[in-house]
Length: 229
Image (cartoon, rainbow, N blue to C red):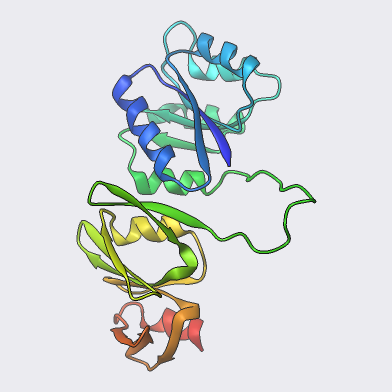
């Protein structure tokens, strides 16, 4: 898990980032600081892997604060102004997010982060990756290797699982594709995302997953057939 610190003086912006961090796999919220001086004190007491840093902070600006750190954690800048992008990248920031920040864009930035190296004494068996999806005011644990396919319902998706269950949760199909961040999941249609290892048969027009025949979209056909062949 990557421990994250939010340095943001706007309460609403900080709240959105907190929600995004809680919803993104592999991230853990360690704290929120309203300005850079609080952040300096926080970093002296806590181990932090990632800072989500607003540029326009009171007392000490975000980039000036970053310059004071001798061995800074990974940094993702957040701001409403694009003109600071070049200076930010000169300071080796991971990414630069423009407000208002969409969750799909947040996920793309998170995917660039360097993950912590596991101990050589960690179990050798493959760790099962999971995510808690919001379903009817309850968070339901879903292992990625249980997913057969996902169907778009516009602002929602239905996730079909290998034990004949399905859940409906609020995500767009492109957002959940970014969240999964796994080459095993293949977009075959504007309405369908499938797990390649769950395919039992396919033709030039459709893919069979979990006993269900799903159409291959015309604009996806060439890439899908190339990957599957």
